[in-house]
Image 1 (cartoon, rainbow, N blue to C red):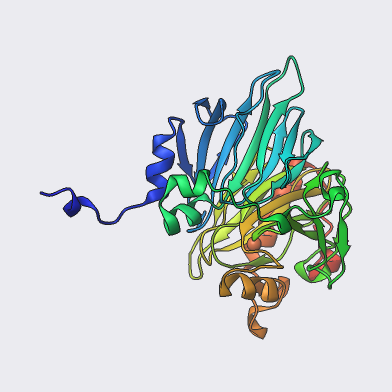
Image 2: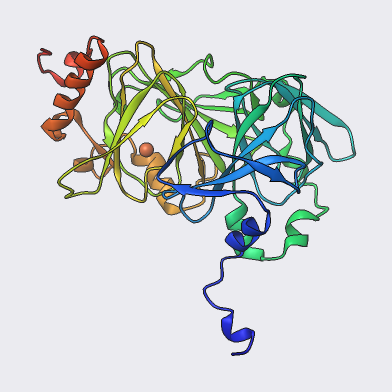
Length: 363
Ligand SMILES: [Fe+2]
């Protein structure tokens, strides 16, 4: 067989990450705080790729661990990247076109994006504790399109419009009002997702709230949603790739395909990541004594949806299936769903507060 005869069904992204020398974990959901990392030569740090079954075609995810007092090797690349800090404290330095630098200090539950192809380094500010960050990137998309590592990692183009205002590196931003569920916050860095002000979004259910982020004017999407104590959201479905990172509280999600006799259940808390697969219904339930908040990261955002599926998701994620949208209203949901939540409430010892949303007595 000639060499060319073996060149079919290639995946330049998988080939590349296999060559990086760090563990590759693939699962439906992953505990990012427990994932084993190994030395990552390219970053001069430690890491593991954490590929979710529901990651879709365009994005991947990884864990980066930075030892006390250490810094990553300088990087720049032609794919976008959004980072969420799982634990530890440090800073990131980003080089602007022209060579000036902007630095910002992050801690647990910080969110930030690296402007496209900007040169950057991460620093662990602690002399004692490791820092662990989760990254979601569009490396699969970019490598599948170009399959040329030098073009992707050694490209001199500056993309000057991606850096935004200096305020965006200082944790400030611009609120862009649209309508409930579509209000946006444009920035490069959010210091603390746990305390960030969210906006009411009644149509997704049960007193919930959210904010959509535009980060570094990128195509990558991020949003944060919150469920009050004793509540759960309405089910909906959309294309693959929304990586869900719980931020506060704990709970569970039910997932099922239309016609499935049973639900798949994922229990979650800070450190977990999972991704609902393509067009699989999913519904999120708060079982904690605190509001439960989660971050979702995907490819194709409210400003730049990228695919028709994302456009339809942002239009119809809170619109009933019966009206052409993608959501199951409480009145139309499988009765087992509410009963399961009441059972969970008894087990966890919290008071369900769903009656005013679903019109059923709570026993
Ligand atoms: Fe969703």
